[in-house]
Length: 242
Image (cartoon, rainbow, N blue to C red; front, side, top):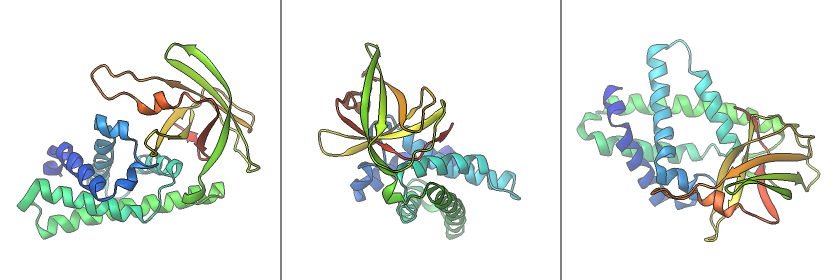
């Protein structure tokens, strides 16, 4: 645990570089490129596995449910599939070995393998329940919404009011929950981004605000720039309180 924790930053970086080199399709609708550029997403993903392992060590009689619940809801909002856990496993274990070298004995590798699949199977079960409760599958979480109104709050903040355009029921939402918006980029890649809802709705609409992220020496928020739309946005059906 201490050795992996000490090197978690480098493990996370190599893990994501290796995974996206072998599976570039994961950058289309699953992983946000802006978060990857900032290093936040890979650190969170690898760090969550380490945190889960730490929880097993400190309280072996129970799993860290709060951590699992938060991740499962995030995954369900993106339509994560069970088979994608194998892809993450293979690339994460590769990165651990690549960084730690001979320190990863067969016993150490087997232990981390067990930790990963304990966490993955717990998440798969929770996500299966979330999909079932909404009557969707990972392939059908996304639905089209129409932009009904744009409200320019400040030069850099725009509020969107969207309404449903199909006959699928919508769960009434509350402020503090979030929606996942999938935006088509100029290069054809779809980029997801999650936004907090800014008001309660009537089951027909959703309202959320976008703030443009300017460079300030760092990668600009490409979703916030591209999302200045006139016609349509696509939103995940799944939302939850945060």
